[in-house]
Structure formats: C-alpha cells, structure tokens
Image 1 (cartoon, rainbow, N blue to C red):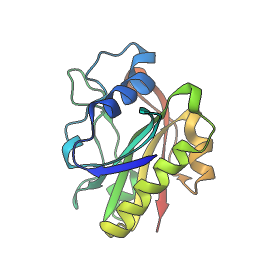
Image 2: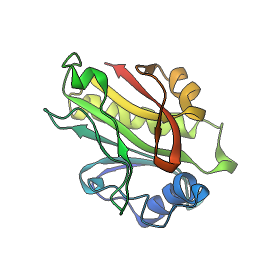
Image 3: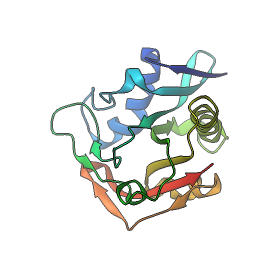
Amino acid sequence: MMHSVSGTPPEAYFATRYAVLRQPLGMPMGSERIEDDAAAVHAWVELDGEVIAVGRAHLIPPFSDGSGADHSGPDAPPIPAFGPLADGTALRPAFQIRQMGTLPAFQRQGHAAEVLARLETSMRDEHGCKTGFLQARIAAVAFYEAQGWTIIDQPYVIGQIGLHRSMMKSY
C-alpha cells in the first residue's frame, strides 16, 4: 500500500531509510535524518505492515543552489550545488528528491518507481514545481534515467556514501 505525507512520517519509515541507505555503510543511527524532514513530502510503500520502500522530496528555497549537508548529524559531508540552480537557468519552483531506498528483498519490483512517481506528482501538482533535482548514487543512475531523469554533471563523491551524479527532470 502506498502512503504519503507532508510532514513527519512514522518511525518505521525512518527505520527502513536507515536500514537501506546508512546501515550498510556503517553509519550511525540518526544519519538517516535530515534537518528539514518535518517540512518535506514523504512517500513509502508498506507491505503486510512493513515499510519496504521510501523517499522524500522538498522544495528548494528560491535563492538556493541546492547545496547543503548530507544529513543533520555531526560530521555530515557537504552536498554540492546543482549547476542549473547555481547559474540561474533552472525553472522554478524547484524540488529535490532525497533518501530513496528499497529493502533488498523488494528491489526491482516497481516499488521505487511508485514512490518516485508519487513524489514527483506531489511536487508538480501541489507545489507547482517546474524542475526536479536529485543526487543519485552511481548504482541508481540507470533507474532514474529509466524514469526520465537526465545526468547534468560530472561524477563526484559525497563523504563515505560514495560516487554520485546530479540529475534533473523538467515538468
């Protein structure tokens, strides 16, 4: 069952986000949290009472280039600016997708695509966004390309998380 909420999602959502995105990297509990989680739109798939796929989106402030911290904990690595936001060529309002993940046993079954579609629809239809941005781990780039996202930069590293590519989608 698909769920979405503007504001703080249930703890089971954060537990899955940690289990998929941070725990495998040896990162501490809490590193799955982002300072603006309460202001973001969250979507998740729940199956038999278990949260199996998660993702979030947030509006990028009007004068922001999208740069920031990877998480709200101590020693959070920086995330770089998005070129089209930094140079003023992106149409606004704009949003960013972050913290997408699916439990391994449920991957490649369409759950992430469902979460992503729900987030995109919410940001476009409810918030009037014209452009979306995300920073994809290298292993996820093909997934996002299949969903219509385009690479917009050279590879870069985000802390211990690893190699990423920035991607964009216009609406």
